[in-house]
Image (cartoon, rainbow, N blue to C red; front, top):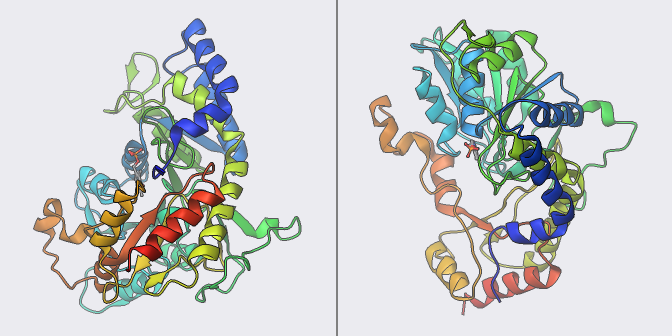
Amino acid sequence: MKIPLVDLKAQYESIKEEIDPAISRVIQNSHFILGPELEAFEKAMASYLHVKYAIGVASGTDALHLALLACGIGPGDEVITTPFTFIATAETIAKCGARPVFVDIDPITCNIDPEKIAALLTGRGRDISKIKAILPVHLYGHMADMSPIMKLAKQYGLKVIEDSAQSLGALYCSQSSSNTSSSSQTEDVAISKNNKANWQQSGTIGDAGCLSFFPSKVLGAYGDGGMVVTNDERIAEKILMLRNHGCKQKYYHLIPGFSSRLDGIQAAILKVKLAHLDEWVSQRREKAMLYRHYLQPVEGIELPEIAPYTRHIFNYYTVRVDSSKINRNKLQEHLASQGIATAIYYPLSLHLQDIFRHLGYEKGDFPVSETAQEEVFSLPMYPELTEEQIENISQAIKDSFF
Ligand SMILES: *Cc1c(COP(=O)(O)O)cnc(C)c1O
């Protein structure tokens, strides 16, 4: 028995008949950079997300970088974000010449805590004049609580850039009570036709949303890829220029830009895959329920909860390991010896990373994030995972305690 963290080969086998002709079509037509393949995918994504503009770029990291620049973030500015995320989130803030200002996370969702953002903005003795934006991350596929974040942004005149790299297809409901978490995944929100209007897609709530098509993401390319989505025409225009050497018209350059396009082959692959996304997302959610079924009684393992305001898409299935009861390293080694791959997203909070040492943060500054880094543990998750595999993984976890 060998169970990978994600099984990209199994997914390819299931859609091979659609993927292979799409790739050879692009090669035949030689539309490799910009052109109709990219336009068709951008149109399909804009329609899927109900958003005006969807602009393909070279990676999720570039999507963040270009979105920050298009929102006017530059040297001397400050951007509020979470310390518990992949490095790209804060790295791109730094690449704009701006400073990440970290705010601790919510212990249940592992996403930035709006109450702590409010505390930072209203706190005495802190100069907030340089803060220009908030960059929430929807970690693992569970959305951050966007309503209070948008309210604060409006109140303080801040831009909001969503890092939706792990949450394409996740939904946010602005009508639900926001602070309580439902412990049962079976009680998950029903998205009926009647209340659909209250639900918004991840990436479409703030000024700009950033997607990643890194192969392990819910919608993965066969290489690197990313996208910025927005309803703001000025941001869209800026991204279009930035991704292609700062020009609106070929060979007439207005600003220093980048060479950051989503290439034609990836666009054709992603367009095929986008048509399967909803089905894959519901399969992921089913797998999450199966994990809950098989892992429910395990002492020292806390299962992921879903806040009532979100539809979780489980890009990753991340449990919490109580470090006073279970040694996470030993558990990981035991599972590896059984052929089961696991991961730790992420083992070191960003405020403690060497690259941000100059910002002056210290251990203890963000205790919730620092606890999460010791406890999070991601199990295999992909649409093709079988019930038998989930049962085996759960059994292997239980066996590891003896
Ligand atoms: C994957 C990821 C990114 C970066 O995306 P790439 O396409 O790998 O550049 C950014 N933020 C988060 C939270 C991610 O998971």
